[in-house]
Image: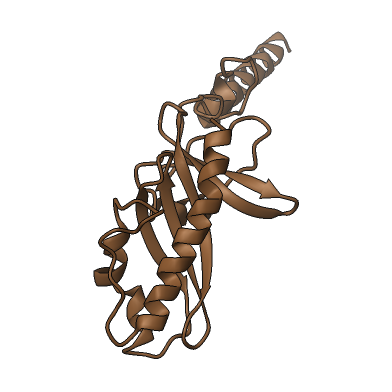
Length: 203
């Protein structure tokens, strides 16, 4: 009888030890080790302030967050910016502030609208604090194919790069698409003139 009890005890011990080892082997790294704050299950990078995704740094506390897809589009006209913050006017976004990796404000991205030959032409513009244009991109238009639609071509939009918004010196209208191209030029100049004082006030 004693021998039966001993065998049963050994079987129980082996079962418990084996169960414990298997449980430990299947535990994930997050379950096995607490993070710096003592919580279990959080990825190690979750609390790291330097983590960034697709060129977008974490937003300042209380500032409107810019979704990554939207921030990627903003980066097309302000590629040297590390992240953006939306400046709201009620529920609408008035413009976006652009910051570098040290969280220093370096400019803004805003939208312009001008009446073209066929319809309204909408552009997105990146501008530094001194009024120099970073880039201009036509994001919406319904102009005549092969004519007014040429405002979307780089041969036109690249002229804006590194020019002063108040003068647009060196930017030439497109021959045969004067109304469309001037609509872009005037809308950029007017909107930039509205945004620039706001950037200086916010410094």
